[in-house]
Structure formats: structure tokens, C-alpha cells
Image (cartoon, rainbow over the protein chains, first blue to last red):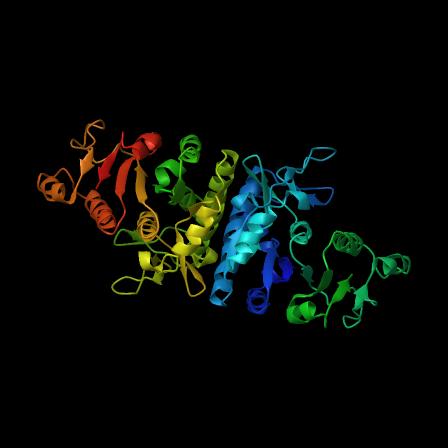
Amino acid sequence: MELTVIKIGGNVIDDKAKLAAFLQAFAGVGGYKILVHGGGKVATDIGRTLGIEPNYVNGRRITDEPTLELVTMVYGGLLNKNIVAQLQAAGCNAMGLTGADGAVLPADKRPVKDVDYGFVGDVKSEQVNGSLIRVLLQNGLTPVFAPLTYAQGSLLNTNADTIAQEVAKAMAKHVPVQLVYCFEKKGVLMDAEDDESAINNITAKDMEELKEKGIISGGMIPKLENALEAVAQGVQKVVIGHADELAGLISGQAGTSIT
Amino acid sequence: MELTVIKIGGNVIDDKAKLAAFLQAFAGVGGYKILVHGGGKVATDIGRTLGIEPNYVNGRRITDEPTLELVTMVYGGLLNKNIVAQLQAAGCNAMGLTGADGAVLPADKRPVKDVDYGFVGDVKSEQVNGSLIRVLLQNGLTPVFAPLTYAQGSLLNTNADTIAQEVAKAMAKHVPVQLVYCFEKKGVLMDAEDDESAINNITAKDMEELKEKGIISGGMIPKLENALEAVAQGVQKVVIGHADELAGLISGQAGTSIT
């Protein structure tokens, strides 16, 4: 059976109506599936109320101990469990996981170089416990990953995009895998001003040209490079597109496919 | 293989050193095992900081919507995931669960009679998804239950003692089960003032006499009646004793056994 790994970020999570609509669509996806969710503003809001101010160094948030407790509560508890409960109501047998659960996502605590990012984990596909994920899928369960990995008895704050990618790469050794990134645009746009200008398909060959022409720039460059790397490592297709169009992203009728 | 279901409450959870020692002992328990944990003061403390004041009616806490969000964060996230991460570090392949995960503990939202308890769930052994628990155990996983069940897309606040008991009764249909309640005393005491006076064994026959003599009173009465009911429904033994003596409780050398 095919496996679809789908990632949603804060833009969906922060909007109750959007999230509910997305989860309905997700419940309808056929075959094996996995959901990876990001954080969202709610952690920052709750943190503020608890007196945990975001601490940025070079534009990146530092996960100190209070922040780790905050994201463990909010990502691993509030968001993850509410998503699971909503999926159950929609008929999808979801199971919420952090990387510590069943040791499914062991990671490396990011080493301190110029910056000490604190309790941040980097996970690689070789570390992913693919056999546990298989057992869960084969028993009719849909894993829902919070953006938390772990090492040495501690949870670690981890980028949801990376988790989705490394899980997809790991599972590609067992089953055909499609990786879908939902974000706030309809795909990689030819014209940044025109949301209807999504490029249908991008290959490694196209990349250089698109970069030279400036069509792909900024944060989209590493996103696409990671997608191409995932494809190089056995993921059949990576699709980037809008969370509102999940069915179209999976069928290939919406979004940008990276192959 | 035998299954041991072990419940710990707030008195262990609220004390970091006690909890660490308990989890180390728990990791050493042989055979199949399940941990059920309660809440603890941390939810009240975090709730206060967030402006969620405990709301009691007739001495029982009401779970309104903000309180449900609070316990989802704290029980399902902070406590459950930190316990799982610590168990992983101790070599126990723990997996944290709420009742929504894998629909493992469907429950009934408590009906409104004199009091509306809000988002509170009552779970019965017939509702417990024993086949999922079996799959997890057979794959070398140790389920760790937060005191949350679910119904109709919503998590529900649920008493941890009840979860432990209903899970134990459900699993007794599949494997021999021992149920261990850890609390702050060494067992059912003959003399409330003497912590070394734990009664070794209590049967249904003994109960009436102990109640008449006033040795068992107050909250201990329903606890023991529930234990006897669990035994009547196939649980081999219920043990009540101190969290510090886990190995002894399991071997029968400490605590009070209800058989």
C-alpha cells in the first residue's frame, strides 16, 4: 500500500475552522498516511501568559528549559491530542506521537557552536524507527507526529518539515511514499503576485534555471533542495501546495510536484 | 506473559526525585506492564498562572473548557511525555497515550444530573480497546496512560484509578493481570498511626469485619470495593502500597493484597 506523509504548519493550526476542514480532508485520504504538525502561535501566546518570553538569537528561537516545557505541553499535549481527537471523530484512527513514544524519533541534541540553541533536536532518516511506524500502519493506525524528538531522556524541539522529510525517507525503504507539504500558497509560483501561477512540476534539472531567474528564492530554496534530496533518496514525489486543496495535492491536480 | 498495571498519583508526580526513582523501579519490572498516571499539583499551578482557577462543586472539580485545555496540555503533554522520555532513558520502551490515541479508551461524557461536571469521562472495561493494547505489548511497548479518555471528538478528564482498574479488567480477558495502586501509605493499615501495620491480605470475606471495626473507612472503602470488584472480574490480585516499594508490591512482600 502507498504511504502519504503530510505536513501542516502553524497557518493551519492557528485557525480552528481551517484546521477542522483540513482534518476532515485528511481523514478522507486513502492508503497509509502520516500527519506531521508544526507549532503555531498558540505556544507563544500561552508562553507569554506563563511569563516565558521568546528568546531569539540570529533570528532563531532558543529552546531553554521553560520553553521546552512549554512546547512539550502545547505541541505534545494541547495541539497533538486535539488533532487526534478530531481525527477520531472524523473516522481516522489517529495515534499521537512525540519522538520519545516508542523511541520512534531518536535525535541528536544540536551541538553548541556559535549559538547554543538549547533543547533542539536534529533527526536523520537512519534514526527513524521505521519498523514501529510499519507496525502502527499495518494495525490500521495513523501516526500524528508533534514536532518533538528526543535524546537521553529529554524531549527536543524539532522542525516539523525536517521530521516529515526524514520520516518519508525512512519509510521509502519499505513502501512507496509521497510527501506533501501544506503551506499558505498554492505551490511554487511563477509569479509571486499571482496565486494561480503554481508551477506544476519541478525536477532537479529545472532548479538551477528557476533559481537563476529568481523565481525560486529565499526560504523556498532550502525547501526545494530538501524535497529533491528526499526524491533522490527514494521518496516518489514531494508535493507543495495549499492546505485547502489536500485532495488535489494528493491526486496531482493541485500544487507543485517535485520529482 | 503476565501483565502488571501500575497506577501512580500526584504524590509521586509532584516530586521530581520520587518520580525519577519510581520510574527507574518501574523500568525494572519484568513481563508486560502498563503505567497509568494521575495529575498532580502542577496542573493547578500552571492553571493559576494562566488565570484558570479551580472550580469545585460539592468538593469535586468541574472540567470546563479552559480546564480541559489545561489538563490536555499538562496531563497529556508535559507529564505524560516527560514520563515517557525518562522511561526511554531507563531502557523501558514506553509509549504515551490518551484515550483518543488509537481510540484506546472511548468513554461516556458524564451525564448532567444535579451537577454538570463538564468534560469528564467515565470509562468501562467493555469500552477499552484491549486488542490495541495487546498489539502494543506484543511489540515490546509499554503503554503509559494519561488520565484522559475521549468521546465524540473531545478529550475527557478521567480519574486515573478508574482507568487503571478498567484497563486491568479488560486485559484480564487476555492475560493474567496484577493491578498495583501506588499511594502515600504502605498499604491498608491496621492502625492508621502506624505506617508499619499494613494488612498483608484482604479478601471479600474480611471486608465487612474491617469496615465494622472502623479499620477501613472514608475513601479507602470505595477503593477496596473497586479492587474486590476487579478481582471478581478476573484480575488476579490488586495490591495497594507505597510507591517507594514497587518491587516489593509486585513480589507480594510489601503492601496490601486484595484477592
